[in-house]
Length: 157
Image 1 (cartoon, rainbow, N blue to C red):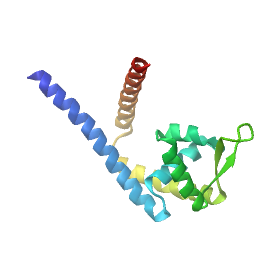
Image 2 (spheres, one colour):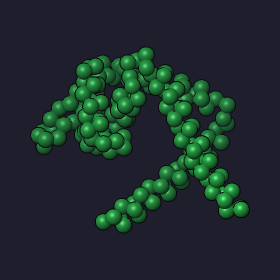
Image 3 (cartoon, rainbow, N blue to C red):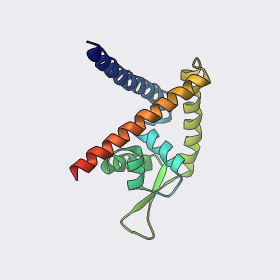
């Protein structure tokens, strides 16, 4: 009986984490919609901003943990909006590097302000010490999941 309760508790934790992530994403998407950004677009812009200009499309897709064709569609849309530019790599003409345009850089400032304000609102009632513990726990769960994925990948090879 205790084992079953532990299993249900663990399931509830994963479900709770997933729900929290989905709700946070929904709030962020709603906050950024007036800027003309869908979730895939703003996350690609944000990641590009954090990684720095001149990132290869493949590396950007990997860091977003999405498939390259999905990123290609998103980058095409961002290009149409005038927010990014893709340039052929001098060393490898098949590879394309992604850059924020001046308009994209200006939009990042608005995006950043909205995201930071939203984060502050969502976390305002949580003491810093509790947030630090929570981040530490998330880091440990993430590390364990990555380790398990690597083990599974090794078994497939």
